[in-house]
Length: 196
Length: 114
Image (cartoon, rainbow over all chains, first blue to last red; front, side, top):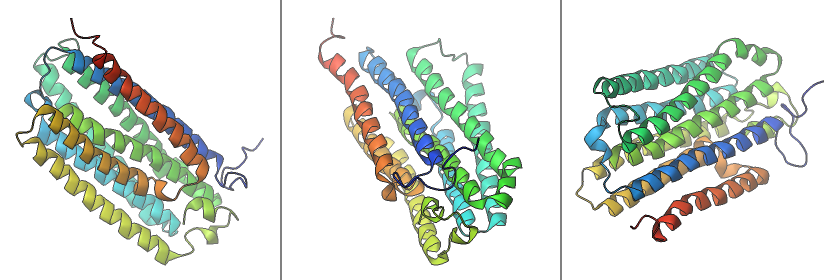
């Protein structure tokens, strides 16, 4: 049985099923990260003292990663715009760049984590590091998930463009929404963990 | 124009049938991208100012909120979304705010004061 409203919109909502689905999923993601942020506030406000992030973490490295993620959001939206212009070649370039930038983010994160682990700074060491590893670790898993989906649309998933370009464009828009959400979460994680 | 509008008839010819409008969108994306980069520099620069912790938190979260709004409104197209999406997000924002208020209430209730 064919899934309804994959590329044609429902008359009552004016939306495709995929669009509603991704926004409901993102709503649940907001609550997931919200719960962790609330826990962070609770732990920090209840602590007798709390270190400033920049005394422990590498701010230039995190600033670089912030720029990388914002740039990847830009390439993601350009990938979608390329499909809207019916420029499949450009879509491949922009989507490829998005996946690569995600990879750069992970490589920087690897160096950041290895540095701390080398110094014996583990999640169990103190509450600050526990919060740092939990929040950035969960975010990193989202980056990996987003990269996997984007890589699929860049590679084998792109076959759909030949048979149903509207559906494919919708799919890319939905994966883009997730990717922008990952960027949005980092925009809040960066100052709260690294700078304050 | 969003793809959902284009998808109403489901024809390839309807995707991006107005290149001028797509170009206009792309110009907005570039502007937002530049603004996000500039605000990232401002965020880091402000952290070097000798502000009190509450003030530093307020300023950093204010800038992050502007950046987040730019991403949500323009990159995620929330500025021109359908009502159902706004309804879903309205409920989400309400619950998120309650979630953020809970620890503040716990703190002000004297729970942490010995």
